[in-house]
Structures are given as structure tokens and as C-alpha cells.
Image 1 (cartoon, helix red, strand yellow):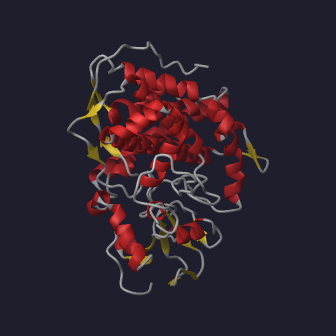
Image 2 (cartoon, rainbow, N blue to C red; image 1 turned 90 degrees about the vertical axis):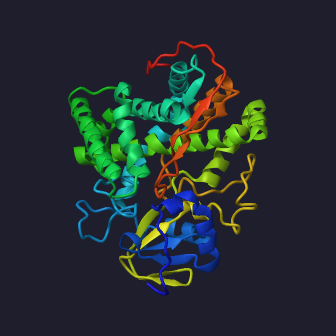
Image 3 (cartoon, rainbow, N blue to C red; image 1 turned 45 degrees about the vertical axis):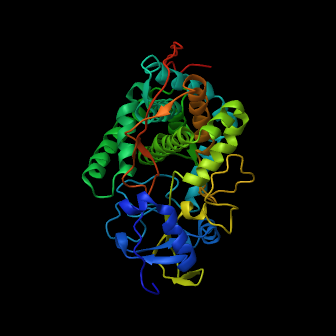
Amino acid sequence: MAGPPVDFDHHSHEYAADPWSQYAKLRSACPVAWSDRHGGFWVLSRYEDVAAVARDDLTFSSRHDIPNDGVAFTGITIPGTPNRSTPIEMDPPEFPKLRRILNPPFAPAAIDKLRPRMFAFTDWCLDQVIESGSIDFITDLANPVPAMATLAFLGLDIDQWESFSWPFHDIVACPPGSKGWNKAQEGIVQAITAVAVAVAERRAHPRDDLLTHFTQVDVDGEKLNDEVILEICTLILGGGVDTTTALLGHALHHLGHDPSARERIFEDRELIPLYCEELLRYHTPTQALARTATRDTVIGDQHVAKGERVLICWAGANRDPDAFDRPDELVIDRFPNRHAAFGLGAHRCLGSNFARAEFTAMLTRVLDRLPDYELVDGAEHYESIGVVNGWHRLPARFTPGDRTGATLDTDVA
């Protein structure tokens, strides 16, 4: 570590209130900075540095050893968690072997087959409130739909969506070590225990679903053991349940305050994909992930020692003026848009196509069915956005409408 440390804590209330000005100051004064928080780590705020580290898996490890008490490798979050997410918290050669078996179910063609379900889940959730003229976009829509879609994707009972949803939200919404964070850890253990029961059932009675695929697939001639399957499911649930919730919340908050932008997208739905990408850049749901240096190296002009932790800040990179024109402006039709919101390099987010499809389904149906919504008092942002930049609540009112009669039948074709 070189130079005086900066006072940077990505889990603090100050960061949650305004991360962007902190990154701007770091980029201008110390783009590779040391923070003593959470055991000490380097903070990267320039796109160039973030990209270089994210693409160098040999020098910057994603590895997470379990148990992680006192060991050097604690995965992709600062501070580390008791749970490992596979394969994102693995390095080559193990990482690409597992990534290969996950690529087909997450491919664009496979996700396209799930779109009707996503629209059906969205319509069902809106049906529950459409006659009332009142909605909380987070609790009534943006929480349940991604949870339902993720459970259906895995082959789990979608009626259990709430017991899966809240712990994966709270684990990123609450500061590490807080009462809410500890309670969320307990909830995640319970959720994964339920997945373990389902995995055992699939081994005995295979079905046509993703859980069965995990129990049957071969890696180097061997079946995946239960521990690895549960770690994969932890990753899918953690990524699938919360980040799209955050993205939709930012979209509806923005459109609720910018009538001209809402009218433009309402009239031209082909803008939704570009709008999605710009929201990913501008609000960056996953703010930052971590790596561990495997050898002494240099980032920018700073010497980084073997074993030191490095926080690669996607949010900082996405507002870097050297990488983006008008970086602090939300430009609906920005193109090209080489944002880092889904990560960069080999560990780039596996679920990016899934998230885009969910976002499109939910935003489209809100524009269709609640076109005149108005935000009301009571919006509440996460108190900690160091992992995910999301919302607890986003209440609104609208002109009541009619139910569609949508069901939660996961066999929708």
C-alpha cells in the first residue's frame, strides 16, 4: 500500500447517497486508491483500470475458499461472505469447465423461450393491483416477477417466491454485519436448504428442468456433487432475484420524473433495449465486485502486493469521461454503449440476456397497463448499495384498469 488512504466505504450511507461524486474525486485525484475499510482494499474508478483487472484472471483472482476465516482468497465481495457462488468465484481451469455447462441454458435462444412466462408473471402481478389504482412498484412487481422467473427457470415452485426473494434482497440492501444482514444470511441458508431437497428429488426422479440438468451433466467425466450444484443455484438466485429489481426501479423512478422521456419510450417501444443499456450504465445495479492479487503487480502507478484485495468499480467506470461522452447525462438512445454493468472479461455476467428479457417484459406491461402512473411519497432506496444499487419501495398511483386473467402457470408457451 502506497500513499495515505482515502476514506472510501462502498457500504456507507454517504456512498449510497451519492457514489458518483466520490468516483469523480477519485478519478481526478487518485484513481487507484487505498481504503482501510473492511480490512483494506484498493479502489479502482477508471474504466481503463477496471477493464484491465477484470480481464486478467491470472493476476487478479475471483477464488473464494470455504471456510474463509483467515485465508487470503475471499471471493468477489468486500467483505467476503460465508457462502460461495460457483462458478463466478472460481479461477481457471475450473471456471471455464463449469461455465461451459451453464452457457446453453442462458443463451439468447433459450431465454427467448422464457419471455412468455415473464410477461405472464408480470400481468399476474399487475392484476393483483390494477383495480385499486395503487401500486408499490418494488413489492408488487419488481420483487416478485424476477423471483418467480428465476424459480421457474430452475424448476422450483414459484409459489415460494417470497421466501427466496427477501433474503437475497436484504443481503445486499443491508450493511454487512448489521442485524438485517445477519437475518438475511439465515434466510439464504433456509432457501438453499429447500433447493437441496429439490436436488435430491431430481436425482431420484429426473424432470425436464435446469435442476435436473445440473444433476445429470458430466464435467471431466464426473457428475456435479450437491455442494457445487447448490453453489451454482446460489449464484443464479442471487443474480436473478435482485439486480433486475433494481434496474426496473430506476427506470420507473426516472420515467416518473421525466414525462418527455416516458412519452418518447411509450410512443417508440423499439427504444426500450437502448434505454435498458443506458440505465445499466447510468445507474449500474451491481456497483462493484472484488478480486485478490495473486502476485505483486502494478495498477496505474500504484504497486499492489500479492494477497491485497482490489475493488473493481463498474459504477465508477461507467461514468468515466474518458470512456463515455456526457457520462453524467442519461441519454436514452446512447449508441454505442460499452458499459461495464455486466462485468468484463471471462466472468462477465451469465444472466445478462435473462435480465434484459425480464426488464423488457415488466417495463412494456407497465407502459401498456399503467401509462399514467404518478409516483407518490414513500420511495425508499437501499441503505447500502455497495453490492446492488436498488430500492426497497417505490409507491405510485394510476387510473384503475381491468384484470387480464393471467395465471402463474409455468407451462405458458
